[in-house]
Amino acid sequence: MLKLSSIFFIFLNLKAIFEDTFAGRYKLMKAIISLILTLASIATGLWLHKGGRPLNQIIFTIHKILVIGLTVLTIINFNQLLKSAKINPLTKNVIALTSIVFLIVFVTGALLSFDKLLNPYTTMIHKISPYLLLIALIGLYYFN
Image (cartoon, rainbow, N blue to C red; front, side, top):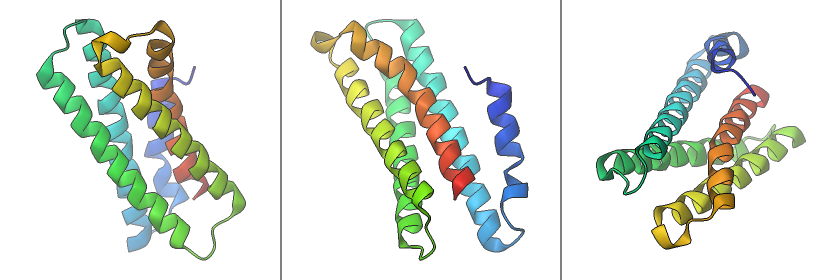
């Protein structure tokens, strides 16, 4: 599995990927905010998991707000990418992959919030999918 230090190394070196212009700094800022939101979502999700049922409503609300913020930021990024004239096929594939992983995270998270719909497969998928989302977001910023 990808180590957390490797993820931080990739994001700290994003400045070399982006040109030193306002647009490049804006892209870097969005990438860093995405990283922070993703890691905070994963951290609060782990906190919720360790706390067990019933869920701590404060942490659960923070977790949902972080995920909504990450979703909005990613939709804005997708929209800007798709409007650009020079989008390559690899970027389109990464956008599609990231969208699918986002959908998986949302659906499994919604199912886990209901006590009657708890399923070991849903739990396992929801434990794995945020890390896949993080990798997909890194790919999105790397190939953009």
